[in-house]
Image 1 (cartoon, rainbow, N blue to C red):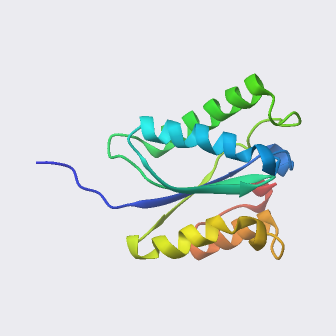
Image 2 (image 1 turned 60 degrees about the vertical axis):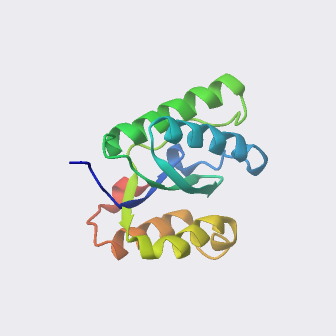
Length: 148
């Protein structure tokens, strides 16, 4: 028997202390690196985007890959790439942890549009407020002290 899954993930993580270091003009290079890593892990990327202090990645996770190891690999690879290339000189690392949210395949279009329009969205809502609303929408308990 084969393994069949249809799980759409949105993973969100921030720069350390939410420091705005991911400058717009160089983000496409970082996104390309992450896309390549996902492809090598047999995951399907639907959309990646973000602003200066955080990223959103929408993808389907291959059944042989654990979410925690994938996010760890993304963060480690991205950090190494940033340090090697110097594309974000003020980058000090990623926050500890991440948010991972699942969606039905029917929500894919709206989710992709939402992530695509991150810059416009954050003219009205801070990154922290956005993250808290995601946690609450998905009924995930949290402690505010760990969201700084």
